[in-house]
Length: 322
Image (tube, rainbow, N blue to C red; front, side, top):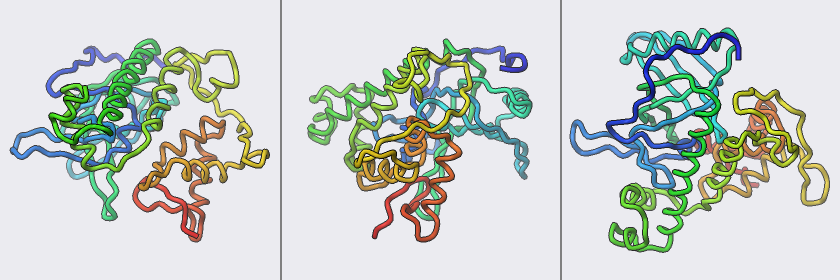
């Protein structure tokens, strides 16, 4: 990485509402905001796996940086990429104590530096006119971390995700009540969120999040997810991988599957009634060796007027009915 390290003096503190370890994919899938009835009660975002998030501890490589000016004042927006997708982080005008650090981050990104960050962020969301839910975080604390700390975060977050996957599987066959979930062995701290989740979301295959766990553990062991099944050579976590040429994916008839057909098959296989989210499609294309830019271009082409896929709500895609 170019440039010197960020000189953040304070370590990340995890207090107040517990900062939950969560991957970008699970949070991106969430569409259930939950606000307490009291004026000062905290708000939450409830994920499909039952995580009830007020604050989250997230990490990833910085992928974009933007400084904005508004009537409220200056703000910053960063995208952090973990092995499952994109964390969207904002430093608001109302958090000026973070602005010097945010300015330094922005300046380094503009110079071409790429580095790993850890953020304690408060959940935030808004609902679009067509019912789509857009999630992000309002940064409360942040700092640069090294590859070893990132590996530890990946392992801890994988463990937390596995715990929620296990709770979800137990909830599928349990009576939908606090007593029923407790009797099924669901941990006490997950019962409330799981009840809300099961009442809001349709059933889904938990394997979609098990893939996140496997990707994270591969990365934590120092192996690049994209080449884990193609090369025995490990790639360090703090290496920003260059785009590699696409690897051929085999179609049902034995021929090489095109990128368009890969996207179509990913949506067909993953749609459980609500479509497939953007990050999941991009991630599958990446696993198969395609660059993010090529995948984004292909999605745009496929969803053009009269195309083979449609974006029925923000960030979610279905196959176009024939």
